[in-house]
Structure formats: C-alpha cells, structure tokens
Amino acid sequence: TIRDEAMEFNEPIPTTIYASDINPDAMSHTKYALSQLDLPSHDVTVSLVDFFKSEPNTTEGGMVVLNPPYGERMEPEDIDEMYGAMGDRLKFHWPGFKAWIISSNPEAIKHIGLKSNHRHKVHNGPLECRWLGYELYAGSRYADNDKG
Image 1 (cartoon, rainbow, N blue to C red):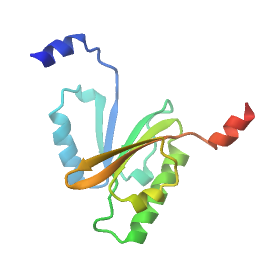
Image 2: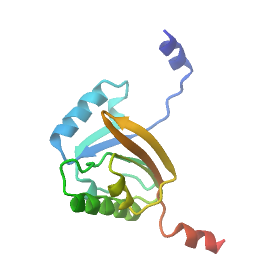
Image 3: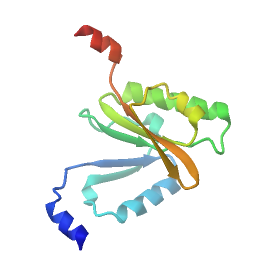
Image 4: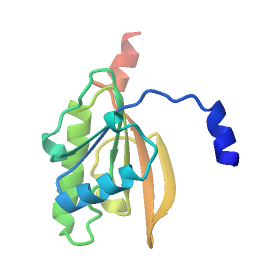
C-alpha cells in the first residue's frame, strides 16, 4: 500500500507522550485511542492527574496540549477563572515548552492572559473551535530582548 511505502522512508523520532486528565472516563477513552495507534507502549504514559497540580516531566521543553472545558455546562465566571488559572499555570510551571489549547469559547480564551503565536479555526464535532499555539518562556519576552 501507499502507507507501507511511505513508512519505509519514515524515520521514527523518539518521543515520549504523557497523557493525563482529571476525569477517569476521559482517560479510559484516551487509553483506548492510544491502543489503536502504532506506538511503542513504553513511549506513552497515561495518568489520572489534575493539570493544576501537574509539573513537567522534563526540563528540556516539549509540547503540552490542552482541551479544557469550553464552558457549555459551567457558569461564565467559573470558566473565565479556570482559563486564567490555566494561563498562569502554563506561564509559571511550563517555561521552555510550546502549548496548544483548543476551545470554542472566545470569551474564555481572552482570560488565558498569554499571546498566541498560532491560531487555527477548526471544528470539534458541531462546535467551531480555535487551536491556539503559545511559546512559553520564563520572565518577559520584552525584558529578555532589551538585554541584548
């Protein structure tokens, strides 16, 4: 097949994936989805962890991907507060990483408090969403640029 031919030229990149969620049902779905992929099992760690209590497993940087609640079943103030806390957590605990967040809630996105450098419009089922990409760094980008 074409896929098999392409795979002959494809060199695997060593990657470790850490998947976590606070919801046991979501993690069950994640484990199933991962079982359908052609990934070495030692490269994937799945855990039941609250993002707001999590820490990076490396100091070498990487990518963190978040699919937070969109606020469909939450009060607007609660969702705005959660998105603000998510932005703070990324800023202060994940420097050196890239972050990607998907959300259908444009008001909540404003509360993240970080400037995205990538924006892509996508659909997640019937919901129009945005994939937002962020470069996370310690301190202020402007203060670091002023030093040089």
